[in-house]
Length: 327
Image (cartoon, rainbow, N blue to C red; front, side, top):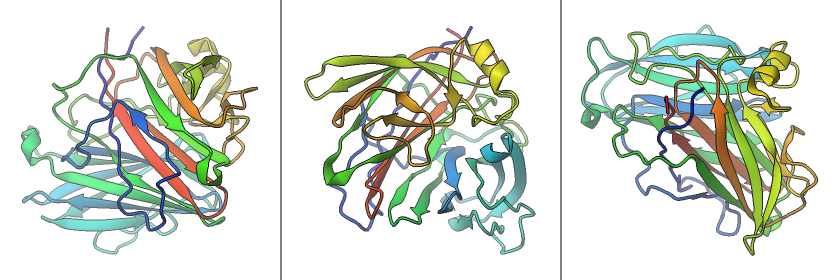
């Protein structure tokens, strides 16, 4: 059995959001101020279910780099599509998930289904041994535009070569509130499997959900810090139609698994997915997630995105990630 060994939490300031968001907030505690340090691997979430997604990647290094792009389509049993792309020094490219072209404007060979949604991973390919972390100047951001008028914008979660500054907590919290008319949420948890340091082809895995997952005990606290016990949930690259779901639930010992959840009955999921805390109607407070266990092949840091929106013109998203390993 594996447990979480170290934790990094990144609070992403939404500096690119054009609408005022001071009263619409999904935040994490504790936080690390620095959000744009260079990393060798970036992890994000794309959604084409009545939404548009664009993901921007920047190589601010002084060297040309090859990047391995992997897309895991949850609506198609976490099926993987991938391609390689090239970046010159100080190069930036935007991937439109409806029409994915490479940095030189050629077709990528990947065409996602109309309502696809899932995991985006971009990994630097190093020709020999990885360079020092000081040369990892690879970062990006994502933008999800909903047809109802709100947007989610945040930096991509970055995985670096050096995690020596990690602490060891096995739980974390995120805040939520109903101000500015918040009525919907998107809690997206991404668990991958891969090497702690980049492999020659920069490949990660997600589709084997029976062995790649992470399990959490959920509690919600109101503004008076009174706890309300919820349930245990599993995050994995799956929806409720995946043929491996039953085996995943048996292996994890839990009753529900998904890549996305709503918070509770008061702030349910934007697309009708499962809730972290059914039968709970708290509108202002925070969610605590306590790590229970993880799958046998779980290796990469766990990534979490939390979005809040009012179903109309306002949306906010933040992200965190932390490393996992043997206890």
